[in-house]
Amino acid sequence: MESPVLTAEPRRETARFSGFTSIEYDEEVATRARTALGRQGIYPTLVSGDGLLGYAEGAPYDRVIATCGVRTVPAAWIEQTRPGGLILTTIGGWLGSSELARLTVHDDGTATGPLLSGQVSFMLARPHMPPALGLLPDLSEGKEREAIIATDALNDWPSRFIVQIAAPHAQRLTMERDGRTEHVLVDVESGSWAALYEEDGRWIVRQDGPNALWDAAEEQLGRWHAAGTPALEEFTVSVTPQGQTITW
Image 1 (cartoon, rainbow, N blue to C red):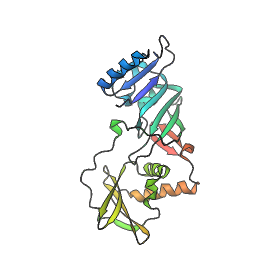
Image 2 (cartoon, rainbow, N blue to C red):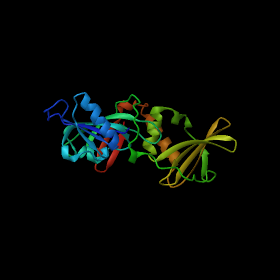
Image 3 (spheres, rainbow, N blue to C red):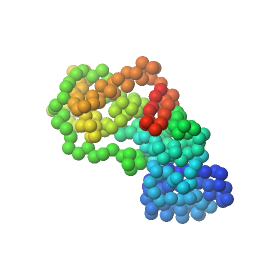
Image 4 (tube, one colour):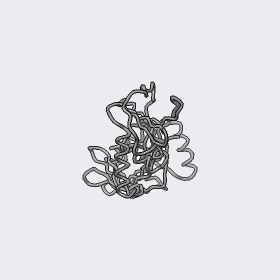
């Protein structure tokens, strides 16, 4: 089941919970939800559609609560939330690390707010799912160097979140090649990739493509470590018409 977004508009109080709008992508699931909610005396406006687009007919909203994960906060949610209203959504990526964010919408059409931590995970909204990997590039190509940071960073939730910021289109896979285990990041869109393996107690990275994925990951992780590895709840999400940024 996918319930992309639940919005609340408390100003309408003609019936119990009648001021809520709930959006469900799957029409059959929406029908079942309407029946189940009705049994509990809950009568929201229940819409079958793409929750990433919101529901402009009921705007402006005081609250937007997403029950699926997103990689970036949709502009429609901000546009349909009144200034001072809140958006609660899980922001994550294709490396499998995500966190709740609580964003306040401002008069200028932007939204900012903190991550709340807790390692909260929802299924990504369908349009935000990663593309199929397809045919892998030739991983024997590229330039090699000794890695500054090992792939342990990909096993740690906060570190993995940092790597997602540095390489937002990368997907991870592990494979056996030439008698060793290689940890691979692949950006299908750009064709960039990085493969890491351990040799004689050292980590070696081999990269190719227009973007040096592990260089970007190491640079971002290095900045985070230099700042004292602040917890994810110290991070701030900012969404403007120019895009989304996550900083600490």
